[in-house]
Length: 210
Image 1: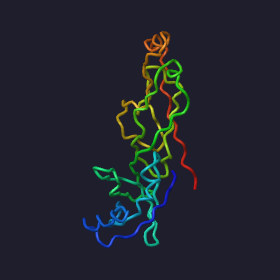
Image 2: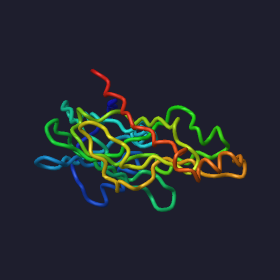
Image 3: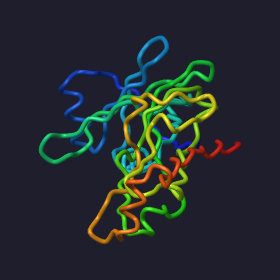
Image 4: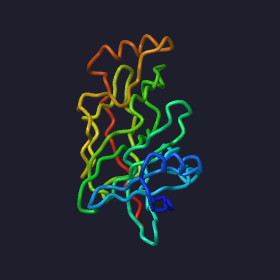
């Protein structure tokens, strides 16, 4: 899993007045929690580009007063009117304890159903998973080539060593839906069990070695 760096400054006060002053100066009040005492700090809002405004899920190495804390973003809060980031919570990562986060999905190939006129429908852009940080890939890769019209890949079809998917097994992740462009032959194949394609197996990209 990729890492990004965020520089922070410890907060002398953690009250509402102090938080408002930080935001007015372009900084975001934040907290690190997970083990022991919470660490309250602030960071420049411009430095959240590769943390918040990205489809990727990254480890966040937070540098505060010469110390580096390896974390993952756990929650972000936004202003109700302008959607501006106003607070961020980070969970301290322990290499020996599993963490819960959401990993993005990447599809590979062109499905049989799409070639026959169906429409690819990616229902979940990210999957909530749990596992040791060393086992978590940058993203979950799904081969969709064998998905026929009317078929899908469900959460129960996705098997990744060392990772648990926190979704009901029958929830659809990717499907190919019928459209007006579907040929009569393709419609017949959907109705015939023998012609149904087996859902594609999921394969996760191995974490990059550092």
